[in-house]
Amino acid sequence: MKFYKGKYRPKNPGKYEGDHHNIIYRSLWERQALRFCDESPHVISYSSEEVIIPYRCATDGRMHRYFMDLKVTFSNGQTYLIEIKPKKQT
Image (tube, rainbow, N blue to C red):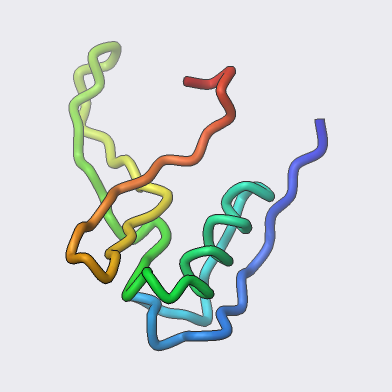
């Protein structure tokens, strides 16, 4: 299996919530999602791995942090937290 990762360079950096110089993607699916958010007129803002969810792990009892792949706010006012995974990992 080949993995793809890199830095995404937005065409509309003002839509990105965070440092638009440091947008990292870890798969082609993530890159496509970033491109959609950047170019869609229905997306007013988005961020990648900026939302952190703390949780306690059941196996070690320690606190950990989970970084959501995307946070997207649409022009209708709805905001979604999105995790991008292949079907076999869900």
